[in-house]
Length: 267
Image (cartoon, one colour):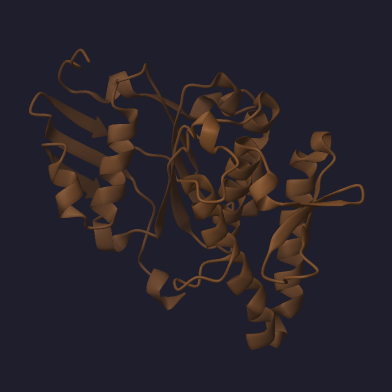
């Protein structure tokens, strides 16, 4: 935790000359929830992409958008930034094990070189036995949230008996692998796991249209579930769905058209 001392959430972003045509100024970004709305082509995804690139120090990516980006605080002074892009999977690929969505889901479930996976988190119980009860409580809470959201499907999440690094779902006497889930179920599980693996530490999550493939009831529950998993996570998301903010989050909306300090171009 010492590396987090002196760090903070994103407070302001400024772009001068985006696409060579307009300026953007977003001040007073909230430390909890920020919901960015606007019509298609208004620049929501571009803004998230630029925030992500800036805080990863990806100069090459930033140059794609033409414009001088600056953020407050500076890139080395913020909490860790995670970016979850939407996976609008073609119908023919929705259940393929090699789809980008499935690859990303496997990456957060199974052991990986970054050490940020559900398997790695569980293994901490062996490395730090004094933390084992707290780790197990956190896993129990995660499973409770997932089971609550999957209740209408009848599925319950479990750790595979044959492979303790794998997650599966149980439906009556059947065992369902992650590959067998629908694209919406995979998308929801990926989002929940990403936030869970922040381990309740201060973090920043960018999400581009998380409602893609999600049932309306899941959209309505999503922000409450994420806050329950990590109330220390600043969330900045774009959406076209009123269901995302329908249950008490309407005061967190920012209209992207109001961030332009010069006229928004036609797309």
